[in-house]
Structure formats: C-alpha cells, structure tokens
Image (cartoon, rainbow, N blue to C red):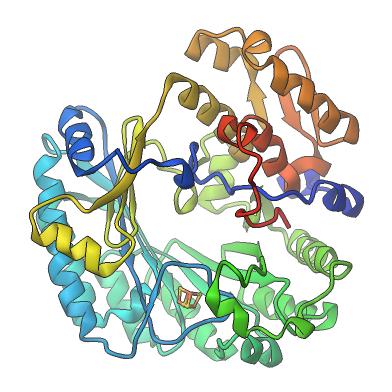
Length: 461
Ligand code: SF4
C-alpha cells in the first residue's frame, strides 16, 4: 500500500483545525512533569527495573552550536570555544558511570541517538571519547542503531567516515532551505555542496539511512523558491525527509526576534508551501510516515509503519521506542518503565548535581493508570492512524465507550468534519485528517482537557 496516496491535503480543514497543540513525543508531555519527581525518585525507578527489562536506548544531548539560527527553539549554548566540549564530556562520562551503575544486569544497548544543539560541534577526538565512554559503561550491541543529527557546515567527508568507523549508521542533516535569501534571513548559510558531501559520504561509508530536515514558513520563502529547494532535495535523494512548520513565537524564543516579520510568508501561502512539499515528495515516491515525516518505501521507518511496528519517542518516530531510554546531558529526558525524568536545563545546574554525586534530575513523572491508557491511544493514532478499540479494552481492562464517553462525543464533531471515522471496534484517521492527527490526539489528552491555557504550544501548522 502506498501510504502517501492516502494523504490528502485539504486547505479548508487545515485552516479550520489550525489549533495549538503538542507534538506528542511522549504522553504525558514533558511540560506536565513535576518537580517533586527528583533525583532520588529517578534512582529508585532505575533501581527497581529488573535485569530482564529488555534492551536499552540511549539519548545524548550535546548543547553547543557555533552560531545561532534565528528560528531556533532548542535548548542550546552558542559558543566558538570548542574546548568547552572537553569539560562537558568530563561531566557526561560521570553521568554515564552513575546511570550505568544503577542499570541491573547486562542489558544490551540497541539504539544510541546524539542530538543537540549540534553534536558535530565535537571534533573527531571528542566524538571518539564520547563513544568509547558509552561502550565502556554500557553493553552496546554490534549492530546497534546509532544515529546523529548533523549540521553539514564544516563537516568533511572524512569526518563522516570517522563517524561511520565509530559505529554511526544513520544521519539526519539539518538544511531547512537551500535558498540563499532564506538562509541569510535565518542566519544559517550553508551551500548545497556541503549537504551533498555529507550525504554522499554517509552512503559511501555504509550508513543505512540518511535524512534531511526542511522547514516551511521561514522568512523569504515563496512558492517558487521552495519549489527550487524541493527540486534540490529530491536530486540529493535522502531516505527520509522531515518538513517542519516554523512557528514564529518571538515572545517565547528570543532568537526569533531577529527575524524580519515582514519577510514571513502570509497565512495564505504557508499551507501552499506544505502542499507543494507533499505533492513533490509524493510524486518522487516518498510515503507519509506520520505527522511531518516522509520516507522512501524501503526505509525502515516506512516499513515499520506498514507493518504496524512504528513507535514514537522524544526523537520523533522510531522502531525502538519500547525500550527504556537513558537520557544523558543537559535537558535530556529518560524513560524507565512507566516513569519519566528530565535532566537540568542549564550546564551549571546539571554539572553541579553530578559533581555532588547526584543524578541531575530537574523534574519527572510516574505515569498513572489513566496516563498509560491515553498514552497507548495517542501512540496508536500518531503512528498507525488507527486505533483498535478491542486492543485497548483488553490491554487496559476498560470499557472504551464508557471510559472515553466525553472524548467520543467531542470526536463526533471531528468525524463530521471528515478528520476521522468512528466504528464500534475502530477509530481511523481519514486521508484528510492525517496532517491533523495531533488535533485528534488532543481530544484524548486529559491534561489539556483540564487546561484552558494552551497558548504555549506551537501551532499544528
Ligand atoms: S537550529 Fe540547530 S544548529 Fe541552529 S542554533 Fe538551533 S540547535 Fe543550533
């Protein structure tokens, strides 16, 4: 089945359900974590996991970037001083040792992801030190999925080869837009050649998946310029493409104040930019994996989606989201069983906790039984665009129609609008509803239902 054919862009629906909402990389979302879930609570959850709790996934956050991109809403530190990475690594290795000591038995690590910030802020020696540290403290399996977010500016083919030698086998490359006017307007100037070099080097060095991230809605973008960007993208033929929406929220994200608002594409152009991207990707044979993600049909994410194995975690769509996740570094989130813990968000508080011999936990959460049911419902909708009522009833011992009576009533309005279909045994997102799946998930979000203040979230599109 070509899933992309089932994605229909409906501008009217998009406008009508242009609500603000979370991206559901977890449920409950991180902003619901509480500060009473501290280092001691997280240590207890780690300690309580038995040796047979299955494989582990590790996320490492590298917060440094050389320069600021004006659209950025990430937690990062802008610096030209690359020696700062050395002391960061010293602390990171201590955090690895502390967490590895709490992990019982010899649990395999089958997935590692480096995100940021800019992970390639680390030079070859620093990257080697990081990966050696992970292998010293954890049992990383031979064929582990090792992925890295890569900023191609200044990254040579030899550096990519070195990453491959360290075990990396998947990259996602930040591009956003190839147009020089757009690049200048967001202070991220990178040539097509730089992107081409890293993608080619990744393929030559046996990386099994390459991805490129674009953003629509950036200053200076027009339909013509974005079409040219898409043509370049398709020539480079990455395995995966993510098309994110730029949410202009300068009151929340300071760097965005440097964006010239007069250059932003208007509300009538933004949906057309997205439609253009969908059409071009569809014509080139990419399938819609979920939300803003597309992939070649033979990519592992597209295959996982086809076979109902796709999952979602803090890095987006994944084939390994069921593993316990150990987060390392500033602001990183861990998930252990039915609990979450997020590290401190500044280098100072994160490193001072570790230097005091404490896990650097800022906040976290133990999922309730209700959280677990809703997490399963939202996960199924986000990843598979359909939900088996019977599967939820038998797994969680609830009567779906009673348990979710108010939600089902609310969903009737979305059904009437054409976003989904509700049957006694199934809830299915329609082709028109696929891009608005978040709006459906939000109906099942108990915290959001209790919370009238939703302005902090970025818009669906
Ligand atoms: S977008 Fe990426 S590279 Fe740019 S400032 Fe933000 S984290 Fe750094």
